[in-house]
Amino acid sequence: MSAQTERLLNLMFALINTRVPLSKADIRVKVGGYDRSATTEAFNRMFERDKKMLRDIHVPLQTLPIDPGFNDEDGYTIDRDAWLLPKLEISELEQATLSIAVHAWKNKQIAAQANDALGWLTDSPFQRATSLQLGLANGKDGVNEIFDAICNGKAVRFTYKSREQDEIQTRTVDPWRIIVTGGHWYLVGFDHDRQERRTYKLERIKSQISILEQDIENEIPENFSANEVVSHWRQVDTEQRVALVKAVKGRAGLLRLQATSIEEKADHDILHIEYSNEIVLARDLASVCDHVEVIEPESLVAEVTEIVRKSMDRNKS
Image (cartoon, rainbow, N blue to C red; front, side, top):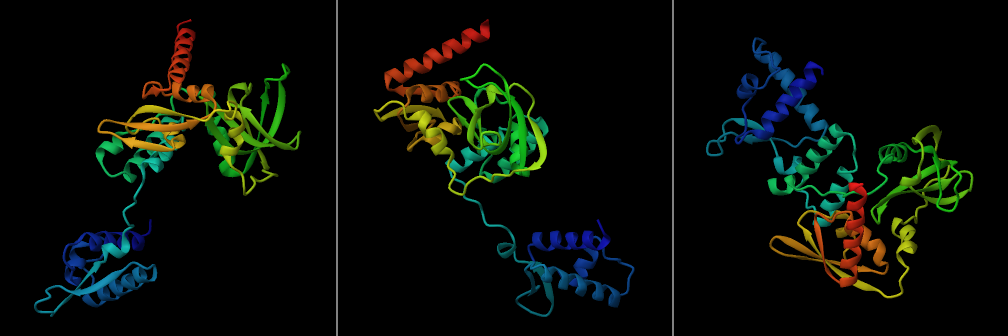
């Protein structure tokens, strides 16, 4: 960092945090970077250059009387209201979405930094301490590599065993989106060999995911909708039903995104979730079973209980 840049930062910090305008004499003594042994004329020239530079980068530098009653000496300050960002109003749904993104990181250092950043966007220590969990969604291996490829516009390659075929095949894909649904991770992208959009269950990927040097050839369509991709998985039952789910405040972010309405209670929330495929919703609920409780219907309660029981039995064995 150059001496001039450091001095300007010191000046900005002093002017934005002062309660009363600072005189030139105060700035010369209190702000690091100004040579106190320099002549008054040299200081004035340097200060004038610094003021011009701040105004050139649109810092709202103000010249105001130090004592409004006498108006005999001017001081300097920065208009906080004009300079600082406005307070961010983040809804519960937006906070849930951000927290889901934060917890997608497997790298502990990055996850901690992302969680700290999320904390600064919330309004209170309680909210900062509240973190949403993705639950035990299966197939998380490879998520970071796919995110990196999407962000950098690169194709990926991996070996894959589809449900229809026993043979393991190599797939080269332009990655578009990562989706979590039914307790599983999926990659949606354009398959180079099949020349069409395909969806891959990450649990069925049998190798490390390689990020290729080649750029994505087939960009994601402008009208692409992740909800449409998974909608046909969910539209199995003809009857449209509504589930009532009790959720711990600040938890079960994926379910909150599915909810058509949320009743806020003192110590929990009630999620109203419309669904057609009971098995898929039950898997979503089971993946965050430590933070939710199904109130109704009874058939959904039974389905979630059975999934959790089987999962516990597998873990014991």
